[in-house]
Image 1 (spheres, rainbow, N blue to C red):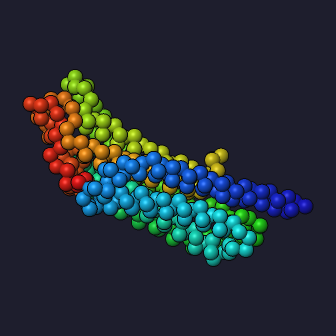
Image 2: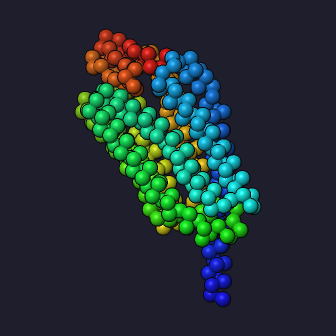
Image 3: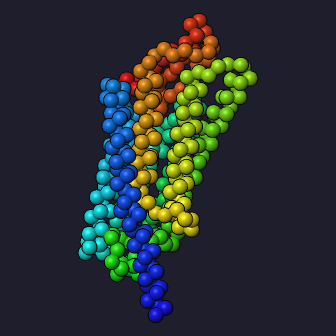
Length: 317
């Protein structure tokens, strides 16, 4: 009798855990498609005419691979919900595949974020090297945790696969809660790089009695972007840990938010590069607003005209 109650309780818990991702993946796809439709005009106007550069390639990868990823999430979750489709082997394999295809998008976004930091620190090679080493380390730890969990995943899934669930059992085991910790730590470091630059720039401007410039607006946008990505990863970790009351929503909303935030940030940079003259305070200081991958644009504060002149836009045009 007790065993029957335990089995029923376990089944109800697992069933709820599978139903939530089944329904949550569709809003994620709808969200990313809606954002695509309302931003495609800006993409065509500002991004398509630009030169074929690494930055442009990264934008298209993040943009369209992100959309593909949302379709993949929805199709995979709904196909696996068909009775008789899933098995121990298939669920174990798909568990690793889902994380890898999601990580490919995240890694591309992290490369863009590193380039933003590189630009904010006036193309500092030391900063770029530190971030590159930490980035590679986070990937290595991610892959090690993934392989460690995959070797022990079959036994956990086998215990729940016999239940009539809509899809693979939504269970977390081993050190799976550590899976996205390396990426979260790395994102936090990038966030603090941007935060430090923003605070130091704000203090300097406040002491000098200067009004806000385009450079400071870009810094502010960066801090919002970095903070948003970091919060998404923290929220994702809370879902995986399973000790909070936050249910597992699947990766779909997470993938959608990452793609939308990054695509909009890059489109905004192209908009800035498209307008060569912007009003700013008088200064003779050269300010490297964005030189991703060493390409530009480089903005020059001119004392005579009090404008921000775009002197190098080879990265964006």
